[in-house]
Length: 201
Image 1 (cartoon, rainbow, N blue to C red):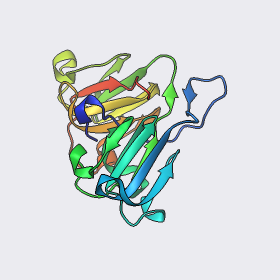
Image 2 (cartoon, rainbow, N blue to C red; image 1 turned 60 degrees about the vertical axis):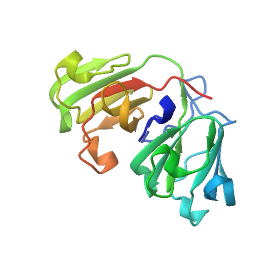
Image 3 (tube, rainbow, N blue to C red; image 1 turned 90 degrees about the vertical axis):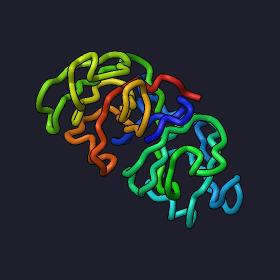
Image 4 (tube, helix red, strand yellow; image 1 turned 180 degrees about the horizontal axis):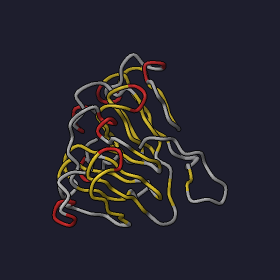
């Protein structure tokens, strides 16, 4: 995932809405996908997760987020490079760092309450570990951890970044256990900073 102009972040296991709970899917979240650049060609309006855009469009080269926050992926089934989008117009998929057509997307639910994540230095919850309740702009400097390869998200939705200070590729994490974060992006990414997803449009 890329953090575009500080507006892009990244999610995985879907969470059902809860009545009176802390996770909430806005009824007004909507993203519109277009086959061609500059919002041209056939379009598809989406207000929830979509695991395979090819079911609706042969390709997707631009999009417009009318409300809410979404993560888009360059592969079906919510894998591959990930890109966090909030309200705005994205006239060309290349403009936010994507090298190919948008293939799937997730709606990020709102979260009300505390944030907690436990990060581990190695896969399968091994090695040094630390519990975080707020943002960390440099995992190496704060915890002397050279990498973060697995984690357990207890509360809230988080973005992990390839570089310190919330830069580079991003991985979106919802509550759940991740034995190998690298499997989410299918690459040897090193994760160096992490922050909470707290803004909703």
